[in-house]
Length: 313
Image (cartoon, rainbow, N blue to C red):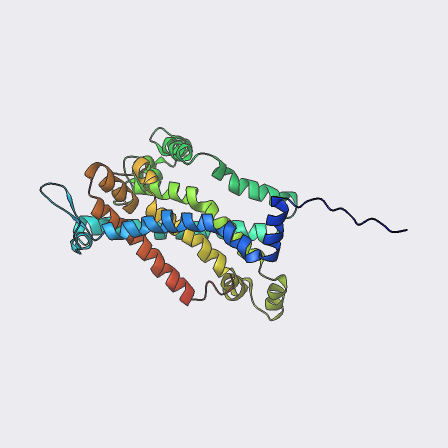
């Protein structure tokens, strides 16, 4: 008895397309990567290129019209006293915020990496990430009320008899003001609060990768806790510290909302760019200011790479 040949259903377009991708997996990869690469190339890199080009233009001082002629005049304006003061103030604030975030984040991240388990670790992640779920502006305006002259910080200082200390801090030139909400110290506090999660999470991930056997070996060889911290933990956790510092340093360099709401009228780079391209209409100088954080971060990354911060990534 002869069996009838099996009748297979006719292959549709979807089957043929699936077979094509199975035979040519690189074609599928190319199709998947093309849209984001186009977006990255045209929108992100294209905007950076346009920014760089406009920074070499200048503005006519009489008519206010942008002269599309190649010149270094705009970059020379960055070395004027008022503009150089903005750059130095921003870099100093970014460095201070980064250092404070690292000092605060390290014990928190170390506890989470070494001692938190199960439900406690879940609560840790929830506590660190919960502030990120709320609105950025809501948090900044909340801190403006907290640090105001009639806010909870002043009320608590009065209740604890610490108002003289608070007033003494606010009287320090370059640090204080009428209240914390109108002082550079208030700007610093809010920056640290806003960017602290971006330091904790990379640092905690790096500390979790430190082998417990190395800590035990260090103790067996007679090293003290301080020596173990300096010679074992910190070098191995350096990639996480650098990753967190990249976030905190770069975000502080470019932020313009916090200095606009909290602190004095002193400008930072982000606020200067916002005002120059907006109300002032000086787009070339705004572009030149915007190039400064890029150059600073490139130099910072080069130094970090030279120190071997990315070797363990």
